[in-house]
Image (cartoon, rainbow, N blue to C red; front, side, top):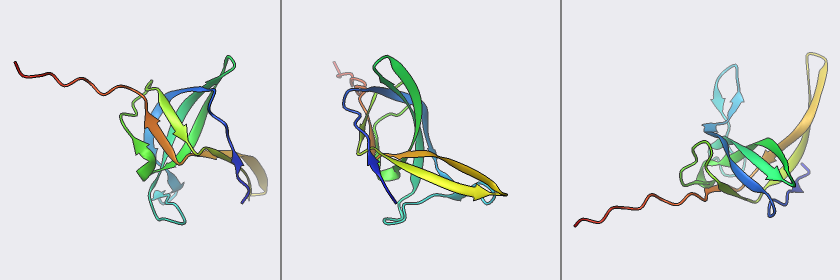
Length: 118
């Protein structure tokens, strides 16, 4: 499958929706896993702002690539983002689009300072 690298170096990104397990089959509720490693995949919606334009990207991310607090509004860094064109046919209807995947989504929020005992 063709993968297109995505340059995110000049974008500002923050979590739009916290991570949720990616569902591969909505009828059965089956959770998606990486075909090569077997690791559970998660979906993270990220607001991607570049050149004054904002878009929401839904990224598939392996569980091992999620780090830090990823609550709504948390600034994040993305590693290894690729776009993959897809196409399928269901009940005679052709559909197509682009899916996004990242190796990692890392929180850029500072950890809360631990209070020192007096």
